[in-house]
Length: 75
Image (tube, rainbow, N blue to C red):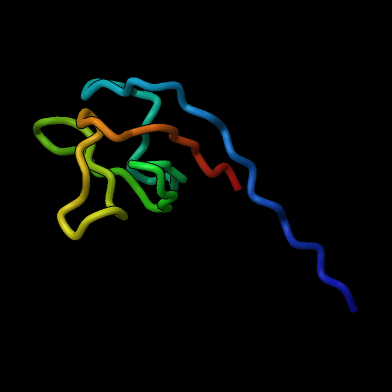
């Protein structure tokens, strides 16, 4: 019996992403390229802006250098 698996869809989010940006949602999952490496995870809203949980233990601020691509995983 074969199962029909859903293939993830990715929606590109253009950079830059600002602290007040509403294109990011802390309940959704994302695939990012940061300093030449791919990471999957979620964003967390902090007082200083968006923090990506999935690169470092403390997360990674979206406004620092090194961000190359951001995709929302839609399914």
